[in-house]
Image (cartoon, rainbow, N blue to C red):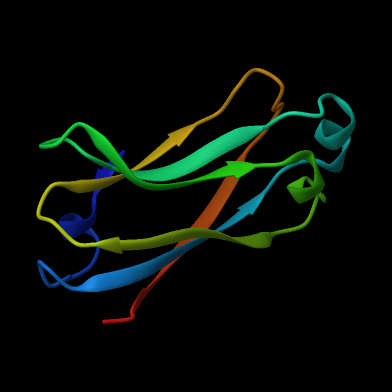
Length: 102
């Protein structure tokens, strides 16, 4: 995990949209019908998810793809959390895209 404030300047109370660019081997799509991994935003203060995305087998293309994680209202303690189940042989994380929407 990594606090957003160490990566980018965000305004507390503003709403942002988060996307991640990831790559998962295409062979992993055949291993399971359930989620391969999950990406999300978690608040340490409230101990709640502020948005998440399950990485589906169809996302495992062997190429980098953009995954929408969702919109969230920024807080000082937001972090990106990545959890990868054992069905994922490799998970390549390239970058995040953060866009202010409100």
